[in-house]
Length: 332
Ligand code: NCD
Image (cartoon, rainbow, N blue to C red; front, side, top):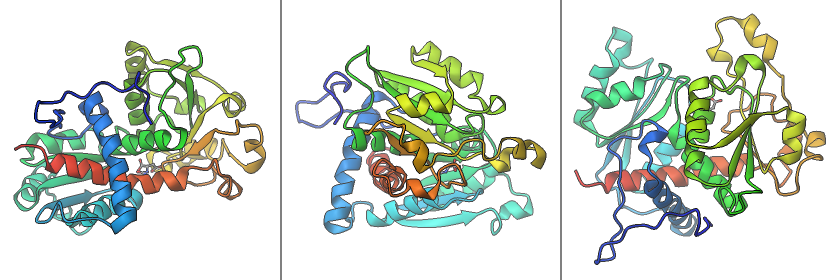
């Protein structure tokens, strides 16, 4: 549960209907206001209850979502599809291999086409800035499901929902004892990290620790944004992070983003979280990972109750149900 201090008051009309700003598009964390975030966190919990009690309902009957995935995806793509279907809507899936992208069609033209057939578009594309480009021509809401090394805002939403579900609060009400969230791995290319640390700026009592090889450090633009927003952040070793963290957010070294195999091999396998290392961690620390994993989390961690990554991926569906529900309820 979010603390009273953390949660902004929701404005209410006399009718009792909450007023929240629902963005036209969800391209980056900057589109997510505090009010919208808190509403999503609340609604994701409602969706979890809905799914566990009766599987879903028909509130999005007649709505069509286009899922345009030009990069591999299992969790993001399937959880969006499942989310839509559990709320009674339907999905059209487009991948690069079978689309007119093969004939040289631009993203803009593909988006204009899909805007004619569907009510919202989810896009994943290897080019940073592609989701923003899509939104500039779309006549329907666009949701960024990962634009290259840019952002992945819906992953950040489900990550925050997971922290809240697992630890009861995001951040701390005691400023001298902040919640320590360590992000580990490929911080340069990992879009999930970029979005997560930016979203954490909406909470108080959070401290970010970066653990990465020098060549994969968090980009300056992200660090500067956090600094300007007053979020405490520093660089530490994995040995330090394992001992003091409340959340250890581990990421994959993103092989597909390297220009040469040699460069990748220099850093591949640089961090491994295993059962032995977990002995040094706090009893209540949680290990998160956006998945897919390679070797950075050993299988022997899976049975540790602090391994939250499978619960995290389940939360993805509830959060995406919440997001679709709110996006489709937005006045047009
Ligand atoms: C991540 C992504 O695609 O950015 N996965 C995901 O969406 N769950 C992380 C990754 O690919 O390593």
